[in-house]
Length: 320
Image 1 (cartoon, rainbow, N blue to C red):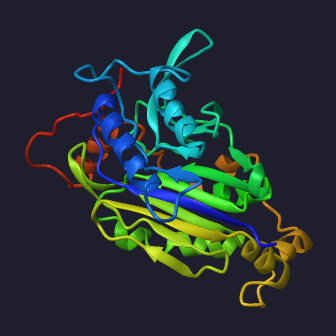
Image 2 (image 1 turned 180 degrees about the vertical axis):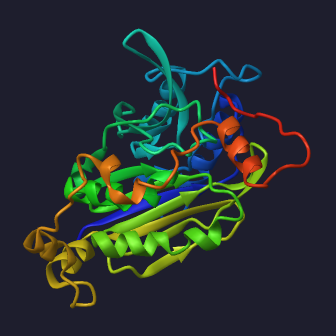
């Protein structure tokens, strides 16, 4: 018997404070669950949970905490798997306060399955965010399917998608809050990552005004054969899609379009990665400057290059 998984996506605008998102997100889930095709997993976008408690940009929640209690209850209410989005998480590491861009993942019992912390923060815009170090692949045992997650800028680095696949992921889910101006650059990434890894690729991007810019939406669902199955527009969108899970195995065993044996050949070719453990020694970096970690560093380099030399800028960082 074939296996299918219904996944609901919530493409909406967001707010930086937690409270503004909580009630609205709960309503969005209710709408999806009242639809004709009911989702078994619901996914939101990056920052859909928020940055801080209202009116205090330095007041962040922990995991577990009040927020995860709230969203866990939604998962339990409907008995679904749930990835509401990402949040700024306050975490004590070796006695020091750290902030992460974190993605809690809930099971049907409302408990946290795992937490993914963004591995490639979008510096310098996220100069206050600490780099995550752990890949997250979780299993929906009822459907015998494994799902790997990533967050926004992570998808620009194919190593992350590939490692999630090597860890067993058959569906890759990426959340983001990408601004208008990046769509043309990014629209080919989902089918490319799906093709490389012979996996479903789901991109859920925020849509609407958020934190001083407009996020372009265009969430996308791509099959393991790299065919674009659905692409949203730039308006709020709530959609449930039925995924044929057997298609993943067919593509991986028989090849994309019954031709490309990508994953099976990867094991055969054993492609070497000479700088995997010491990437800083790669020749490409010999004449490249270090990256801009802070907005101040970026602005200084731009001014030296003759860019952004008129007017004054306002630092909107949420650094503690």
